[in-house]
Amino acid sequence: MIHGLGFSTYFKMLSSGFSSKIFPLLEFALGIECAQAIIVLSVLILAFITQNFFQVSKRDWVLVVSALVIGIILPILRDNFNAI
Image (cartoon, rainbow, N blue to C red; front, side, top):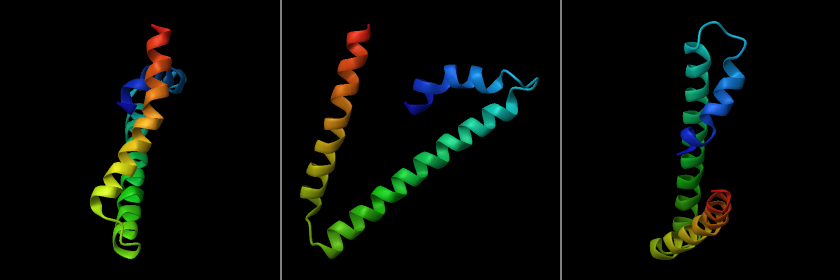
């Protein structure tokens, strides 16, 4: 989903000075993938610490993280649907 949201505009801006499109495309894709891997790894480490050291149950962890994600996504969805 992240790829599609910012890809076309950013790629046009990024590749405007290059004759070859493959290197800017590869750099963009690798940058997005690395960022996603860092975020996932951070969440997994945080989950491990929370569940093992603070003795938070897996159920509670999933509920809290799900509520945070929904709280972040709902305003974004509202703004995007209002723009249509």
